[in-house]
Length: 479
Image 1 (tube, helix red, strand yellow):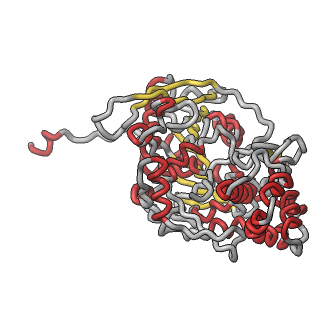
Image 2 (cartoon, rainbow, N blue to C red):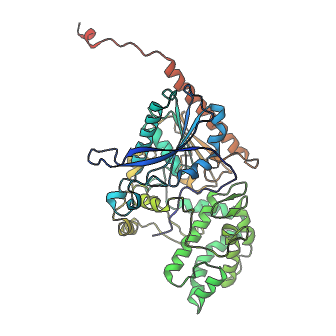
Image 3 (cartoon, one colour):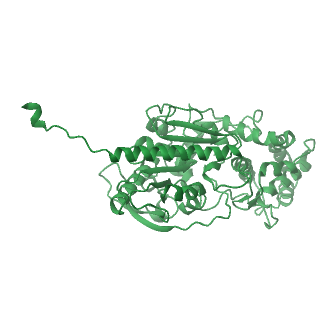
């Protein structure tokens, strides 16, 4: 199976937010009466700015990871809470973080893992909001605005579509709701990644494009595996063809991750990164005429920007692609069920190793690993795919540096379902905390999002100020 691409990447800046942690008892299965199992869902709350007389609730639809990651890295919500006098709620997605329905058994068999779906997660959020509005004094008339980035952005949009009586509107940042088979061509994602690097340096993109065959050529030579392990300072030496596959998967994720986080300021993930990290990487990849081991040594200089920019790392761990708090285990299951997002590369219009999309092989691998077969059109059929004309009150934001924008809504669907484009933006840059280095386009995007939030809140308030109409009794119609 090709490299697993995680939607949610969190590169940290030094922000410290205060929240309280709570737990709520949820049904494992919201859609039948055959299973009475329950689990404890974690959510965190900050009500410091909340107007207790019906002030809004800003609700983050947690995605594939520990909810504290999202609470700590969605600065936009924290920064506008005081302005709107809003309560902040960040809800953890089932099967991630501490919200494991069956504890350590949650991913051991389909009878346990099969309840990991977006529909079940949205029902969790609906139940939690209903509980909070009914149990917290002053919250009964509070309008709820849902926020989300990446898969969380998909959930935010789908939440508004499926439960418009629960949430007043949605800010869906970098939400690839169209990244499914038959909707978005599988090659587009890799082409955007390549474009980001090529715009920094054509030589840089050419070196990466040539590196895949060069790796194969180098390890064919006597002691090639040993040379590569030493030259790249690998934590675990490559010894087999399977190790080379893992190493290439790591490289695929590195180049993809850098495109997702081409932020205008320094940030940290597995290790600190500089501002505009692609530019820094490409400063090390200048000589596209080199070959063989010389090319790989030059490529390694670029890699060090990703895993060892500060010089504190002792080796390159190609077996680790993400923060362990991001649920790559759970996402792998979701990618094998309803979140089937095809990716393919040709090595010409992109700089990746050629890899066609083969659903049959993909499905077979999913069955071997999880004991289930994917449903590639499940999400589009449930939520509408491109046909979301009946929806309302959603802002879809997309940064054009972000490869996930290829599966995003980048046009105005209607007057109330609108697209905000951030040409200089990477992955959900608008949801991150404001920074002096932010481009003007992301500042304007946040202003647009705030304007829609104000509009949605006013619409909610007007409806609740109206006195309910008196309806004639049934007897009147038969008199």
